[in-house]
Length: 319
Image (cartoon, rainbow, N blue to C red; front, top):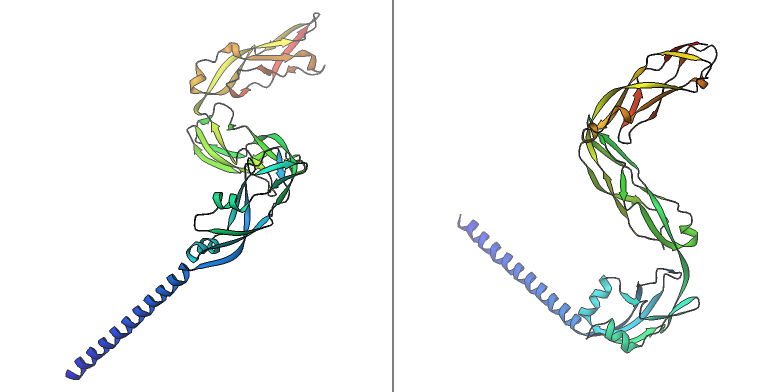
C-alpha cells in the first residue's frame, strides 16, 4: 500500500516537471517571435490595383495591372501583407489624368507615403513609377425585366392587378459587344404556394455568366402583386344580332344568355349588366345553318374568365 502511494507521488512530481518544462518552452518561443517581429525588415511586394470612381462611360481594358513596392517596416506590420492580398487604391477622379486612349497614373513616393501607408512604413521604391490604363467606351442600355414566377393561390384567391417588378427595367453599362447582346433580364425561377395575401418579395435577377466588365443598376427586383378574395357572378345579358339584311325578318331564341365571371370581392358591387355586351353576327352564318354563335364583345376590365353558358342561338327567318 505504501509503495503504491509513493509511486503515485513520484509520478505526479515528474508530470509537474514536464508541464513546467513545456510552459517555459512556449514562453521562450513567444519571446523569440516577438523579438523577430519587433525588428525592421525590407521587402518588395506586388500590390494589386483597386480602381475607384472610374467614369461610367469608360471601361478599363488592362485589368491586371500591378505595382511592385519596396517597403521597410517592423515585422508586425509585415504580417498584414503576408496574410492579406496587398492592394493600392487609385482614385480615377483625382489620381489620374486622361489622354487619348488611356488614363495615366504617375505619383511620387512622398504622395503614396502620405496617402496609402502608415507612419512606421517607409516606402523605398516604386516599380514602375508610371501606370497606363487603356480604356474603351462603354455602352449604356436599359432593358426590361421579365418576371419568371409561379404563383399558386389558396382556393378563392387571385391577383386583382398585374404582377409588377420594381424596378421594371435595369440599366446595363459595359462594352458594346457584351451589352448589345442583352435584350432583357429574367428573374430567377421562384414558386409561391398557398398565397392569400399581397406579395412583396425580393427576387434575384438571372445575370449573364460572362458578366466581367458589366455593371447592373440592380442585382434583384421587388415582386409586387395585389392578392384578393375572388367570387363568381352571373348576369342575364340580352343578345343583339347584327348584319341582318333588311329584306329578312329574324326570330331567335333565347333572347338572353347567362354570362358568368370571376371578380374580386372589392369590385363585385361595381359590376352591372351594362358592362357586358353579347352579339351574334348573322353575316357569319351559312345558308344551311339554323343557329347563330353568341360572342362576348364587351366586359369590364376588373373581371376575368367571363364566359357565355349558351353556345347556340336558334333562329328562323321570314321574308
